[in-house]
Length: 157
View 1: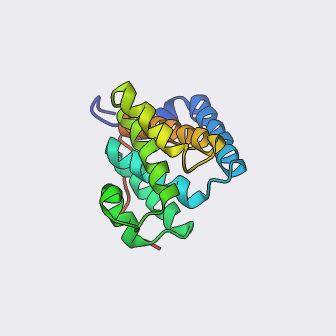
View 2 (view 1 turned 90 degrees about the horizontal axis):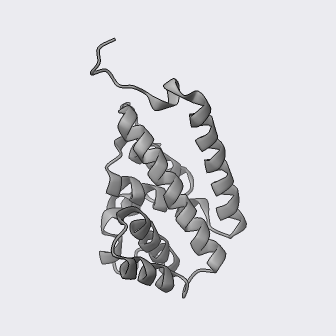
């Protein structure tokens, strides 16, 4: 094996990979209990992955978003969600603003404003759950990017 070959973190430390998988399962229980839909969770996962440039996670979560009822049009326009005039609901916009603030980590006042605005539309439990979704997705993005997980060509279904 050449030094330049990918080093898959999930394969070299499966116990850590399994623990982050368990963490992700707990995040899913939390967001569902807070009333956040799988569809919104997948929009958050996609937006975080777009920002981080994680091709593997974009591919995976585009499929999951479609399975959760998301449209291909909205997936394609997600990068410009704030310019789509009504294509995304007020709740979805609040969730996406949280996703961006949790991923870009803008100045403290901008992060505080994003959360404060979201709290006008979402419950505190939903705001918290969406932040945890973004935290988990950021971790998975970094694992996939560092591991250089490959994207396999397949049809969207």
